[in-house]
Amino acid sequence: AKPSRGPVLAPVAAEPRAAVADVAAVPVRPVEPAAQTALERSPVVQSAAALPSSQPGEASAVLTFRAILRDDNRDHILQPDEPLTIDVEVKNEGRTEAQGVEVVVEGTGVLTAQLPSTIAIGDVLPGEIKRVTVTKPMTSAKEPLRGELLFGLRAASPMAQVPPVKKFTILVKPGQAEGTQAVIDIDQPPKGTAALKQQKAVVIAIGVGRYRDTQVPSVKFAARDAEVMAAYLQSIAGLSADRVRVLADGHGLKQDLTETFDEWLPKRVDPNTVVYVYVAGRALVDGVTGAVSLVPYDGSTVSGGRVYSVRRLQESLARLPIQRAILIFDVSLEHAAGADPSTGAAPAWEIGATDASAKMMWMIGNNGLQEARAFEPGRHGLFTYQLLRGLQGPADLDRDGTVAAGELCAFARGEVARMTSEQIGNSQQPVCLPAPGHGALVRIHPMAKGNNPKPVVPVKKEDPAQETAPKTLPAGVGPGQ
Image (tube, rainbow, N blue to C red; front, side):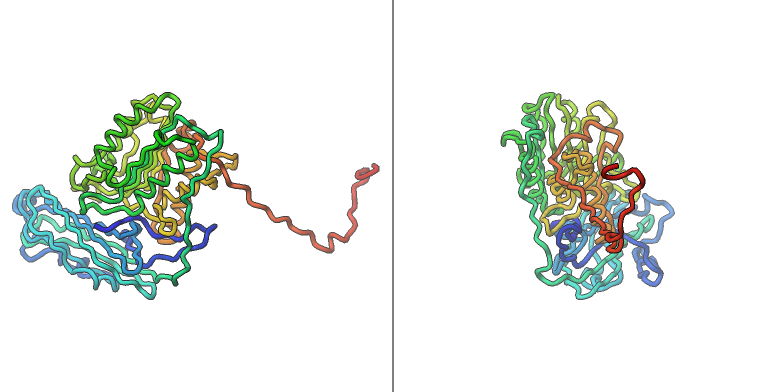
């Protein structure tokens, strides 16, 4: 599977702008009637043998499916010759085997010619889930283009009903000339101050972007994000190396996560400890409960036994005698295997309003199920990049000299939403929990030194005619009065 991480975006306004990526594949937008294809106008997704049955689930298979588009940069924007990966998952919820199942690919625009017209799934037994991945290189465009990709399902045997067509908008943007993309490096951690030293703090940074199971889409920059974030937090808090643990790629096994939170961490905390947990990578959302689970290096997106529950992580922290915990997640979110994307539950991060949860600040890169986007010029995930940038001082929103946890999350949330909305029209909305007014103590936890000077207000020069005119003072006012 190819790397997949958020849109390749241009730098923020205060920095040189970067080249815009070439192709964007974003979730469905309404299609004009003239753009409708055979998949929408006729029952092409079902063979003649697959007419609706009067006894659904017995004489006919009940099929559901989902399709996901991914690219190397995890941003739904294809650069020149960057491959596009299509993940298709088909589930048979009926009692009859579905035979000769395939996904039909249609649409409009030049990119459809580079994709197969059908994706073979094969026979699907009752209760079985089959997943197929297809990767094709996309050629670059010389001018802006737009098209639609549509995915339908058909089978050689009867289906109880035809699943809805899945639709994606294809945006093609021409690349810019070489040398116009700015190289942005924010990897040098800022130094802390005496007021920010937290020698009893603990940092756990997890970044898994490559997986043992090659069917799990990789996440670009995840390991690098974890390493740099750990260096930032260690430098600002003045921590010794034995209070920092980084689990990157092959060192991020499920067993490593379990040992870290159940054994390593409890030995290093007391009532004055602040625990920082950072996670970059991929996570699954339970379609019924919304529970979020991390995919470790040895994990799988189709096996619930090979993931690490965020709820388990939260419960581990709740049992510890700590002062507070700052939890940061820059992860791509998708439903667990078998969930219906149209009815599946939204991500549920917090367990509930308890005394322990009141001590936890959550900074989450996505408020929904989508790929977390990357910032290619900065070589980081976009949300992580904005957090690192905020820790250098600009997130001091009230200009009191300190970047508080609530300010840092609000700063990153605003920058990510603005950049994604302006540049690709499909906003990524981070989440900050607890919301303002619902967790004052943890939200004002100091994270870094502020460096956000007030803007200089230009002094308006007086009109020359007014400068030469004599100033009349009120009677009894002025020198000598």
